[in-house]
Image (tube, rainbow, N blue to C red):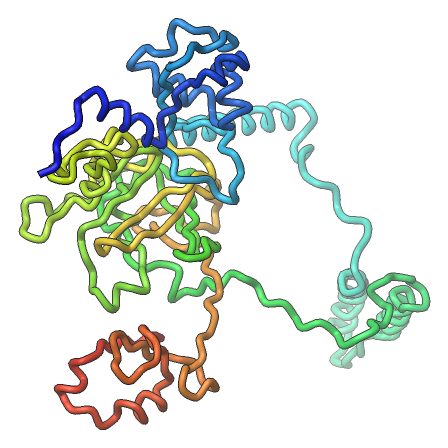
Length: 445
């Protein structure tokens, strides 16, 4: 049985491997590094976040921001996974609900300023003036409206005097149409867009957003809404697992619990493993676990394996506190609203479910709710953007899109293998029940 290390040595080794603890070295002290230099120039992190985290232990209270830190000073850093695009996290954490109140206050003050301006300069003073430069279609439509207003009274007067039918005079419209076409002709307007391309014309680009009425929402929030009015929606961008490319964006309300978004999220692995209730969010250095089924047989805290892992603990004693993630607080996702979150714009968060399946996401932005947008709680969460999925061709014929995935198939060259419906029937159409139990079949739309 291996011999346990002394507590002092174990503590020093834990500090050495802790990714969220910075210890001032002799080289740093010789260079005169201060707390301001560490946050702004060395680590590119928010000074306010570092002061907030170290306020509990009082390690930095005795030093000024520009004062040289002594050797051995331990500075606790924010627990951050990474930041979108690799950009340094210069922004600070903020309370989502408090920021929404500030946004409401800004919009309220803007409304008061607009009302005061119109009261001083007249109603409609803030309206944009009418456009003076019109397109070809707009000019033709505008002239037709003017001709209708000019000829309609004459037609009505003639109809009252007799039953004769008065034909509409279309010659002014035809004349104006010829003038507009000539004014917009390539000979008159020397625009680059009228020039002939040296090669074939480019293909029409399709919009990247593949949102549709059938994909805009999955599981809506059925809980009762006690809010008088919803003014803003908060959008979270989810990324692909391997390449971290943008995949979809979900919009939520600040009054909703985190479990509302958990229930709405879809994963390509769910058809294979089924819907598991154990999941957690890691947002802003805090674990938010789904504990709605706490006390039941299948309940498990997936964050416990991360928080209790100790890289320098005795191998015979696996249980220990990891100084990196072990100090992160754990809260209930069902009892936490989005308004209670401490978030940072652009910082990666983690959604883990199905034991080991993890998804990265980040706060993407906030939008005010307009008159033509979803404003009720039972309409959230919903998608605002879905990237077009790439078609995977059948691995057998290579001609048709694959709609069937086979896992652990002994006859397939890879795991999983993708086939179209026709090739699947050729390969496994005459399988017996025993042969069909050797692999897992998943149908995709």
